Length: 302
Figure 1 (cartoon, rainbow, N blue to C red):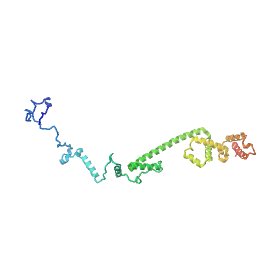
Figure 2 (figure 1 turned 90 degrees about the vertical axis):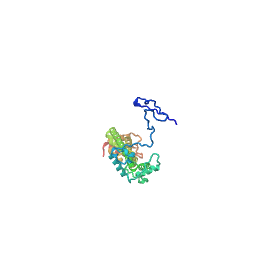
Figure 3 (figure 1 turned 180 degrees about the vertical axis):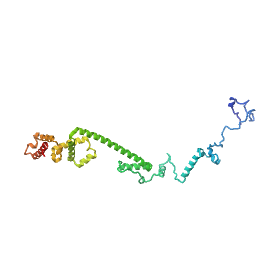
Figure 4 (figure 1 turned 120 degrees about the vertical axis):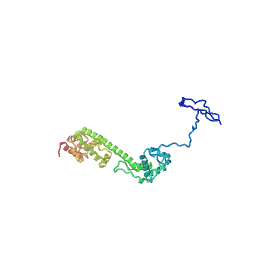
């Protein structure tokens, strides 16, 4: 076997290769003046790295000093805390934490150990009385959360946040609608002036004549009783009805002023085809009664 010379450089001696020569003797011995290198450049696999422990652990059993877990303790307080924590865990239920590669069944088992009931009817999530959230949405919310493995107390928090958001939105929406409605009503009052109450009576007359309580409830449900445009339309309809139906029978005697009564009388007289001008007409008597009642209103006769 060939023995190749080992090239060595002494940095402390200016980079020289040694005293003289430097090549090994044929028998393998080092040249004169050179101390043989008895160390190996390849680390011994049997050697172990020393573990640095805190000073307070210097007197422990030598075998324990090789435990890497002790290297993390810097003082006696850290060691004591670790020991107390380990004692508390003795006897407690243990569980394997699933990973991203775990099956749905393994995840479900972990959720069950954390407090997720298997049955949906035992999945307790409460909602407030008079909640704005309907039954179908609430039940679907619970079912979805249960299937996703969300614990009941977590689902309760999520639902309370959702319901609070709905309530806040509803309150804000009502406040905005009220502000708009009040502004529109104020504009209608300014438009109608002193005739506001009278025109509102006409609107109520139209509702009563066109459907009564059933129509009134429908308009209320749709939010149309306070709608300005609807009120304008109903008022015109009510006024037309009041001119056709006798005011006293409609209960609007106090709502029709003398000028309007006089105008209605003039319209009847100016209409040449009105039954009031034809005594043989079947409606002559009815029209005359209407004319006389308008006359009382026009001239303030009781």
